[in-house]
Length: 530
Image 1 (spheres, rainbow, N blue to C red):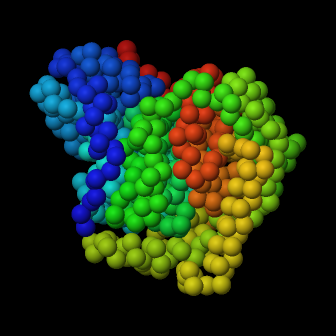
Image 2: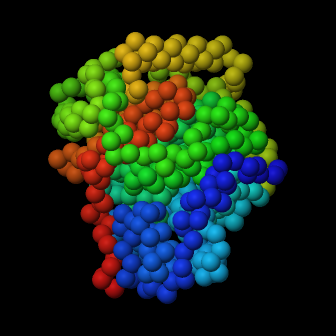
Image 3: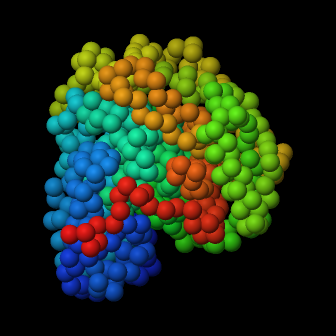
């Protein structure tokens, strides 16, 4: 099936941003001299333009960090497959630079891609041993767009098996870069830990119920779940198509905006993206302002939406202290903050109760892949190879369809919650709703997560991520600070449909004033160590 590339990111590539990034020839730079910890797209492009960096050196520096920290040291296990052609691709981009040809807006940007997304030149495992050697015969639309913009998929990242949690039969246990004994959230776990540890410059995650924002929040990253129709899902294994989407996971808001500029837009292979036509600005990145919160009106969503979390819990109090400080900072930046508002808990039924779409969507997806080793949800589960923890949750979807009466209740619940949120925002004249992505720090990884279908590790404690997927509205998490134990806390902004430009502006303003992010101590710089 042909890919549709007539969207605004290609226009951006041929206009002002491309012209600004026409780089001069650069001498070779030894990777050992290059410190890529917390590098950004802008700082990287500045070095390329100055001639103090080559694309090969940049890619090699990231490969060196993967070799040093992914399977040894803290053993984050964030990488599933390193792209064997990464250095060759870097050389080709250096040749383009030397020829002084126009360069893409993501020229030589090493991207970490969740292994739920198809690449025709690397295996796509979905975190499962069943698909360890499966290589699709096509690229996902998002991959085509990234490559057209000059990016290099440096590696496919580990993930919770079939997009659930942080362990899998094909990927093992993914670990939190800030404390490898703690869980990294899921299911875009490897992208989160990998971007935090500077295994790549930026990353792409997938979010059905929080899988971009959870790993981003606990990894001190920016994570954006876009409005459902904004980014094409063609070439991505679905879980629940009315909730599935992909988005940026980055160390800065600007980098998230630059990524979104490239990946957003209509794709005929995913017709729902037609809703985005007319709802996308010329650029998400060009409108960012340090005073972007001035005049904003936001409300704090309380109480905690996870009833398991008690106000007296130590972890809850630690996160609450960070959030209270963030609220003070928002006000200092010119925002009006209403503290607090509440919503009914109907969103749980709209998300957690939705396993009616899964089997139909999975089977339809694999019908397009005649070379897949297994091609139905039943075959996947009957193989006996799926991680027991994940298999227990997946089996609940077997035999269910969107024709079941229960699915109508899911849709009704979602619509009721959409009305409730929009009414609250209208009544209170809100631009956004804010809350902690998690009201509790990540918990210790249980010793038996690879073998026990019910491991006692309190995974997902304090989870507030479910509101955005049940609504289909955008949400963005940005670093808000750290607990006394050094664990990151994420501040999340939820907005109306297609309000991404507003959300990234708010997050940028907060980020520029606070600079809360700091790299994990478990993966220090390699410069001078060899």
